[in-house]
Image (tube, rainbow, N blue to C red; front, side, top):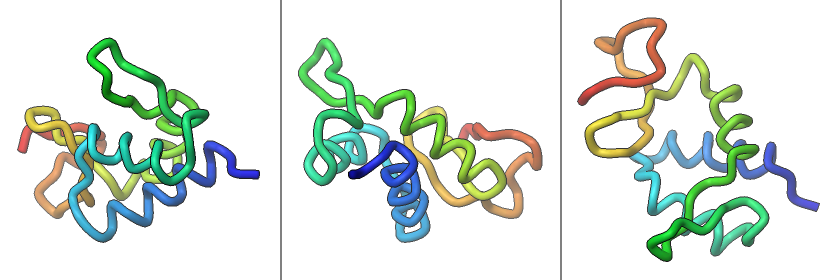
Length: 89
């Protein structure tokens, strides 16, 4: 049986391949793992379930950042603030 931790691990592997836009990855999670790991938004889109996000954030605390302006995750780069999980670029 798939768990939120399994989905978070899959996300962590995906972010190593490319930048990961929030809306696209939520749809991919829905397609691959099903509705238990996403929540519906008011505009008919999917959002990543809180349990998955919590597990993903724990797994990638030192290696991934959230890019605020455009809404995607990416691997941490040398110029990123060392203790920040969010960046503007």
